[in-house]
Length: 92
Image (tube, rainbow, N blue to C red; front, side):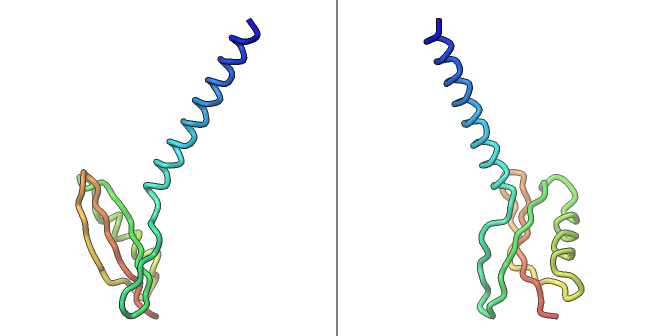
């Protein structure tokens, strides 16, 4: 009986660890990737929005990150229902 209980506890903790790893992987997919740099040295950033939704939320996120200086669009991607805006903030 003790051996069965020990196996069940191991199974639960393994399942919890696997679930936690899956959650972290999913969350990291939503975050920005490592910055790439333009030829002028400015780092790029990316934001993602549902392609079927309001893409203006991506634009608003870019504006919020760059402030009054604005931003330059580097790339726009629409893949598997996700709209990705890649941009670089302008110098102030």
